[in-house]
Image (cartoon, rainbow over all chains, first blue to last red; front, side, top):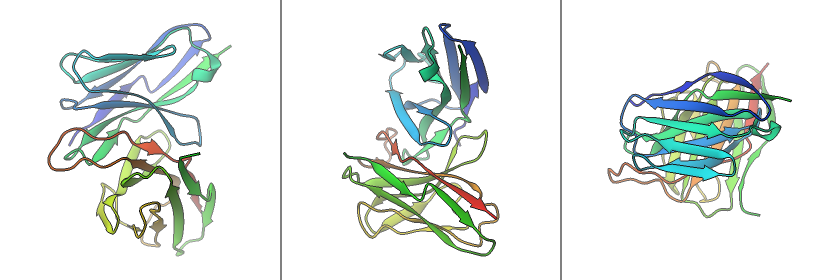
Length: 111
Length: 119
Protein backbone atom coordinates (compact mmCIF):
# COMPACT_ATOMS: atom_id res chain seq x y z
CA UNK A 1 0.00 0.00 0.00
CA UNK A 2 1.08 3.57 -0.55
CA UNK A 3 2.73 5.46 2.28
CA UNK A 4 3.53 9.15 2.56
CA UNK A 5 6.36 10.44 4.70
CA UNK A 6 6.52 14.11 5.62
CA UNK A 7 9.59 15.99 6.77
CA UNK A 8 10.25 17.65 9.03
CA UNK A 9 7.67 16.54 11.59
CA UNK A 10 7.80 19.95 13.21
CA UNK A 11 9.30 23.26 12.24
CA UNK A 12 9.82 26.51 14.11
CA UNK A 13 10.76 29.55 12.05
CA UNK A 14 11.02 33.24 12.67
CA UNK A 15 8.43 35.44 11.07
CA UNK A 16 9.55 36.61 7.67
CA UNK A 17 11.72 33.56 6.95
CA UNK A 18 11.18 31.09 4.12
CA UNK A 19 10.55 27.41 4.75
CA UNK A 20 10.01 24.13 2.92
CA UNK A 21 8.01 21.02 3.85
CA UNK A 22 8.52 17.77 1.97
CA UNK A 23 6.24 14.83 1.24
CA UNK A 24 7.77 11.63 -0.12
CA UNK A 25 5.76 8.71 -1.46
CA UNK A 26 6.61 5.01 -1.49
CA UNK A 27 4.95 4.73 -4.92
CA UNK A 28 4.33 6.91 -7.95
CA UNK A 29 1.91 9.68 -7.19
CA UNK A 30 -1.19 10.06 -9.35
CA UNK A 31 -2.23 13.19 -7.55
CA UNK A 32 -1.01 14.99 -4.47
CA UNK A 33 -3.11 17.17 -2.20
CA UNK A 34 -1.87 19.70 0.32
CA UNK A 35 -4.08 20.66 3.26
CA UNK A 36 -3.65 22.97 6.23
CA UNK A 37 -5.15 22.32 9.66
CA UNK A 38 -5.41 24.60 12.66
CA UNK A 39 -5.28 22.66 15.92
CA UNK A 40 -8.66 21.13 16.73
CA UNK A 41 -10.19 22.13 13.43
CA UNK A 42 -10.89 20.60 10.04
CA UNK A 43 -8.59 20.51 7.03
CA UNK A 44 -8.51 23.37 4.56
CA UNK A 45 -7.68 22.46 0.98
CA UNK A 46 -4.66 24.35 -0.37
CA UNK A 47 -3.62 22.85 -3.69
CA UNK A 48 -3.65 19.73 -5.84
CA UNK A 49 -0.86 18.62 -8.16
CA UNK A 50 -1.14 15.91 -10.75
CA UNK A 51 1.52 16.21 -13.46
CA UNK A 52 5.22 15.60 -13.05
CA UNK A 53 7.03 18.92 -12.75
CA UNK A 54 3.82 20.78 -11.96
CA UNK A 55 4.01 23.84 -9.76
CA UNK A 56 1.16 25.88 -8.27
CA UNK A 57 1.13 28.98 -6.14
CA UNK A 58 -1.40 30.67 -3.94
CA UNK A 59 -0.41 33.88 -2.25
CA UNK A 60 2.92 33.07 -0.58
CA UNK A 61 2.61 29.28 -0.76
CA UNK A 62 4.09 27.29 -3.66
CA UNK A 63 3.72 23.54 -4.13
CA UNK A 64 5.71 21.42 -6.57
CA UNK A 65 5.54 17.81 -7.74
CA UNK A 66 8.84 16.38 -8.95
CA UNK A 67 9.28 14.96 -12.44
CA UNK A 68 9.33 11.39 -11.17
CA UNK A 69 6.09 12.02 -9.27
CA UNK A 70 7.35 10.58 -6.00
CA UNK A 71 7.99 13.72 -4.01
CA UNK A 72 6.25 17.01 -3.43
CA UNK A 73 7.39 20.13 -1.63
CA UNK A 74 5.49 23.01 -0.10
CA UNK A 75 7.38 26.29 0.12
CA UNK A 76 6.28 29.32 2.10
CA UNK A 77 7.90 32.65 1.36
CA UNK A 78 8.18 35.39 4.00
CA UNK A 79 6.26 33.43 6.62
CA UNK A 80 3.56 35.11 8.71
CA UNK A 81 1.80 34.09 11.95
CA UNK A 82 -1.25 33.15 9.85
CA UNK A 83 0.80 30.37 8.25
CA UNK A 84 1.09 28.51 11.56
CA UNK A 85 -0.67 25.15 11.74
CA UNK A 86 -0.33 21.56 10.61
CA UNK A 87 0.32 20.85 6.96
CA UNK A 88 -0.72 17.47 5.58
CA UNK A 89 -0.14 15.88 2.21
CA UNK A 90 -2.58 13.31 0.85
CA UNK A 91 -2.62 11.08 -2.21
CA UNK A 92 -5.10 8.74 -3.93
CA UNK A 93 -4.61 5.10 -3.04
CA UNK A 94 -6.34 1.77 -3.37
CA UNK A 95 -8.06 2.32 -6.71
CA UNK A 96 -8.48 6.06 -6.23
CA UNK A 97 -11.47 5.76 -3.95
CA UNK A 98 -9.67 7.04 -0.88
CA UNK A 99 -6.80 9.25 0.21
CA UNK A 100 -3.84 8.28 2.33
CA UNK A 101 -2.15 11.01 4.33
CA UNK A 102 1.28 11.81 5.66
CA UNK A 103 1.63 12.26 9.40
CA UNK A 104 1.65 16.04 9.12
CA UNK A 105 4.18 18.82 9.72
CA UNK A 106 3.52 21.18 12.62
CA UNK A 107 4.63 24.71 11.73
CA UNK A 108 5.20 27.36 14.39
CA UNK A 109 5.97 30.96 13.46
CA UNK A 110 7.81 33.01 16.07
CA UNK A 111 7.33 36.78 15.98
CA UNK B 1 -23.38 29.12 2.65
CA UNK B 2 -22.45 25.72 1.30
CA UNK B 3 -20.35 23.48 3.45
CA UNK B 4 -19.94 20.50 5.70
CA UNK B 5 -21.13 20.55 9.30
CA UNK B 6 -20.28 18.12 12.06
CA UNK B 7 -21.90 17.85 15.45
CA UNK B 8 -21.27 17.85 18.26
CA UNK B 9 -17.87 19.57 18.41
CA UNK B 10 -17.02 17.73 21.65
CA UNK B 11 -18.44 14.38 22.76
CA UNK B 12 -17.84 12.34 25.86
CA UNK B 13 -18.60 8.66 26.04
CA UNK B 14 -18.68 6.24 28.92
CA UNK B 15 -17.27 2.77 28.57
CA UNK B 16 -19.72 0.42 26.85
CA UNK B 17 -21.80 3.16 25.23
CA UNK B 18 -22.50 3.64 21.55
CA UNK B 19 -22.36 7.20 20.27
CA UNK B 20 -23.28 8.70 16.92
CA UNK B 21 -21.43 11.54 15.21
CA UNK B 22 -23.33 13.65 12.75
CA UNK B 23 -22.07 14.82 9.35
CA UNK B 24 -24.19 16.90 6.96
CA UNK B 25 -23.26 18.55 3.67
CA UNK B 26 -25.19 20.87 1.39
CA UNK B 27 -22.64 20.84 -1.45
CA UNK B 28 -24.63 18.29 -3.45
CA UNK B 29 -21.62 15.98 -3.29
CA UNK B 30 -22.12 12.29 -4.05
CA UNK B 31 -19.21 10.95 -2.00
CA UNK B 32 -18.67 11.21 1.74
CA UNK B 33 -15.91 9.94 4.01
CA UNK B 34 -15.08 9.46 7.68
CA UNK B 35 -11.51 9.73 8.96
CA UNK B 36 -9.95 9.37 12.36
CA UNK B 37 -6.97 11.48 13.47
CA UNK B 38 -4.77 10.62 16.45
CA UNK B 39 -2.14 12.97 17.93
CA UNK B 40 0.94 13.26 15.73
CA UNK B 41 -0.57 11.07 13.05
CA UNK B 42 -2.18 11.62 9.72
CA UNK B 43 -5.75 10.73 8.91
CA UNK B 44 -6.93 7.14 8.60
CA UNK B 45 -10.03 6.20 6.64
CA UNK B 46 -12.86 4.53 8.54
CA UNK B 47 -15.71 4.31 6.00
CA UNK B 48 -16.66 5.93 2.72
CA UNK B 49 -19.75 6.16 0.55
CA UNK B 50 -19.97 7.10 -3.10
CA UNK B 51 -23.72 6.96 -3.42
CA UNK B 52 -26.83 6.80 -1.30
CA UNK B 53 -27.51 3.41 0.29
CA UNK B 54 -24.00 2.18 -0.44
CA UNK B 55 -20.81 2.37 1.62
CA UNK B 56 -17.49 0.55 1.97
CA UNK B 57 -15.08 -0.14 4.79
CA UNK B 58 -11.88 1.82 4.95
CA UNK B 59 -8.65 0.83 6.64
CA UNK B 60 -9.89 0.87 10.24
CA UNK B 61 -13.63 0.03 10.12
CA UNK B 62 -13.72 -2.36 13.09
CA UNK B 63 -15.89 -1.03 15.90
CA UNK B 64 -17.61 1.55 13.68
CA UNK B 65 -20.80 1.58 11.63
CA UNK B 66 -22.33 4.04 9.17
CA UNK B 67 -25.47 4.62 7.14
CA UNK B 68 -26.17 6.65 4.01
CA UNK B 69 -29.93 7.00 3.71
CA UNK B 70 -29.76 10.54 2.35
CA UNK B 71 -27.27 12.21 0.03
CA UNK B 72 -26.67 15.01 2.52
CA UNK B 73 -26.05 12.89 5.60
CA UNK B 74 -23.44 10.29 6.62
CA UNK B 75 -23.62 9.57 10.37
CA UNK B 76 -20.92 7.53 12.08
CA UNK B 77 -21.64 5.33 15.09
CA UNK B 78 -18.78 4.46 17.38
CA UNK B 79 -19.76 1.21 19.05
CA UNK B 80 -18.61 -0.31 22.31
CA UNK B 81 -16.56 -2.76 20.23
CA UNK B 82 -14.13 0.05 19.33
CA UNK B 83 -11.39 -0.46 21.90
CA UNK B 84 -9.69 2.91 21.66
CA UNK B 85 -12.22 5.44 20.42
CA UNK B 86 -10.70 8.61 21.87
CA UNK B 87 -9.68 10.62 18.80
CA UNK B 88 -10.55 13.52 16.52
CA UNK B 89 -13.08 12.49 13.85
CA UNK B 90 -13.27 14.26 10.51
CA UNK B 91 -15.94 13.98 7.85
CA UNK B 92 -15.27 14.89 4.23
CA UNK B 93 -17.12 14.98 0.95
CA UNK B 94 -16.25 15.16 -2.74
CA UNK B 95 -18.23 15.70 -5.91
CA UNK B 96 -17.88 12.03 -6.67
CA UNK B 97 -15.53 9.28 -5.70
CA UNK B 98 -13.82 8.25 -8.89
CA UNK B 99 -14.17 4.58 -9.55
CA UNK B 100 -13.71 2.16 -12.40
CA UNK B 101 -10.00 1.72 -11.99
CA UNK B 102 -9.00 5.34 -12.52
CA UNK B 103 -6.08 6.71 -10.61
CA UNK B 104 -7.37 10.20 -10.07
CA UNK B 105 -9.75 11.38 -7.43
CA UNK B 106 -11.85 14.43 -6.68
CA UNK B 107 -10.81 16.96 -4.08
CA UNK B 108 -12.16 16.15 -0.65
CA UNK B 109 -13.48 18.98 1.51
CA UNK B 110 -13.55 18.57 5.26
CA UNK B 111 -15.87 19.45 8.11
CA UNK B 112 -14.70 21.07 11.37
CA UNK B 113 -14.37 17.76 13.23
CA UNK B 114 -15.70 16.13 16.41
CA UNK B 115 -13.43 15.37 19.33
CA UNK B 116 -14.54 12.19 21.09
CA UNK B 117 -13.26 11.37 24.56
CA UNK B 118 -13.95 8.17 26.46
CA UNK B 119 -14.34 8.67 30.19
